[in-house]
Image (tube, rainbow, N blue to C red):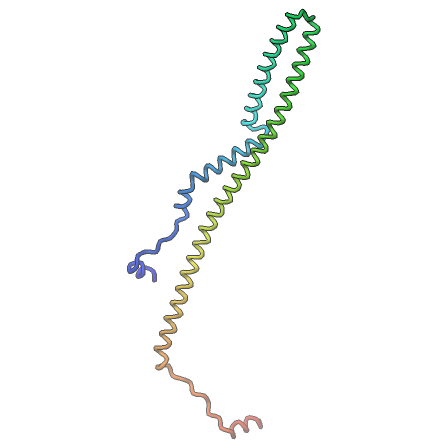
Length: 189
């Protein structure tokens, strides 16, 4: 039907996958950012985790410094010996470093768990993006197949109509006229 039907009824609207993808481009980019962030959260050596580790270390060192100052003041007031002071400082440092290690382990565990959750969300978003593309592709195939089927039916209908009009003009083959004697002759031979 092509150009004639387009001129008569207007051109058939077709879905443009690029237009749909343009509408979704910002969302696609955000899903990619979410996936990248999740990967960084799960990697203990990523810039994100190293910055958090450094911040945690800095906080622990600041706390150790404050506690050490308090220890020095208490030692001066009570007249503690330098050996006692050194022993208390060593115990305080060991305790602080142990806390730091425990906090680091907790931070990595929390980051990894949060990263896995975020990665799962990003995977769901990527699945939606893939399904959108596949659905658009299948819709185009279905439309093309429907048009093809419609054209085939129309062609078959036109051919049937043409044959029905032409049938009176087509010579008909007459069946052979066999009589009983000719059939018996064929049997004998």
